[in-house]
Amino acid sequence: METIILAVVIAVVVLGALGGLIVGSRRRKPLPPPPPKTPDITAPPAEPHVGDEAETPRDEPRRTIEEVDLPGGPAPVVVEEPPTGPELEVPQLEIPEPTAGRLVRLRARLSRSQTALGKGLLTLLSREHLDDDTWEEIEDTLLTADVGVQPTQELVDSLRERVKVLGTRTPAELRGLLREELLKLVGTDVDRTVRTEPEDRKPGIVMVVGVNGTGKTTTTGKLARVLVADGRTVVLGAADTFRAAAADQLQTWGERVGAHTVRGPEAGDPASVAFDAVKEGKEMGVDVVLIDTAGRLHTKTGLMDELGKVKRVVEKHAPLDEVLLVLDATTGQNGLVQARVFAEVVDITGIVLTKLDGTAKGGIVVAVQRELGVPVKLIGLGEGADDLAPFEPEAFVDALIGD
Image (cartoon, rainbow, N blue to C red; front, side, top):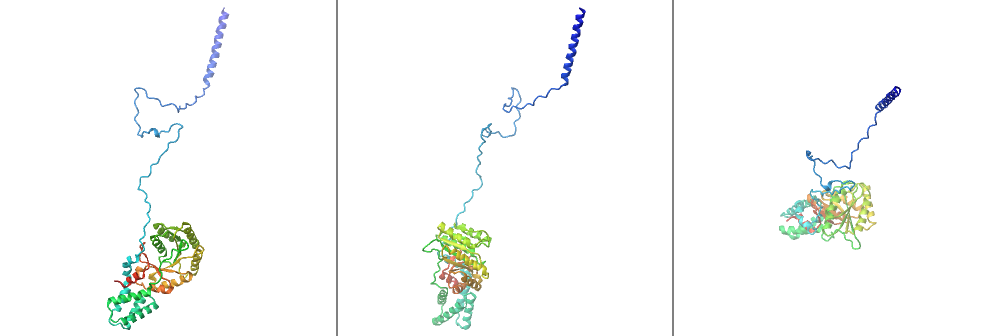
């Protein structure tokens, strides 16, 4: 019996020891850490319980339901409001002043600078005794006004003869006498129309030439206004490619009256630009193409040859209807030298005298016509956009001799 009890005790001790070993080994081996908890993004935020204090509202604007992105939904369409600034103004075309009677309206401006000639002649002719010295003074007055040697001699000879026949000379008679003789010199039986409407085709082609500084590009732009005022459509050819500002200046003139401008690269081929201008003018069906050429110094032979090339290239489309030479009235007799050289290169058909309001040398009209055998067709009487006027001999002479 004692042996059985002893065996049971030993068994219990052995089992206890084994249990202790097992438990001790488990305590020495650490357990793996639990996986990190991922927030449930679909779970709604916890609702506050009854009695919980409400949070202080955040300083953020509340979003409307239209501004909240729904999960998986399309992006909201943002409609931009139009700008609330001042409305852009659409540039309006200018309406040029009618050309009919324009020179008459500008007569006061012309007479301010020209009456020195007329008044000087009338004063001399009113002397009681017209001796040789007086006639020499009359000659000097005419020469100073750039009338030219030959026209001056013709005028003095005619005046001497008519005064001798007239006898008594009242101021009104002298004025009428002088007016008749000046009109005879200027010429009243010449066609001064700028030819822009050929009968058998369109468009009319006008080339504008002249020396640097005469106002050639400005004159081309003003001529466009004259034509638009007379109801014609115009294309401008900026063939002055040597001056960067020339094409910009011409385009600005054109935009004012709705005329299209054809231009090329800076320092490009002027003849190519002129050719394209006529081509586009034909395609657009306009009435007139105006071609502004580079301002050539008349002493530069190569440049003058190039001007001849422009003319030849343009005439592959059609003959030129007008070649207008722009001259500065203030240059006097030097302008005649320029005119002579240009006439040798291209066939000048008409003259535009600019800056005639700033000189007392209105006699250049007579001299240049006599030199070239072509009429003055337009005159510039100021810097205003509509200060280019068709030349009217009667109005011009009336301005010369004053009221």
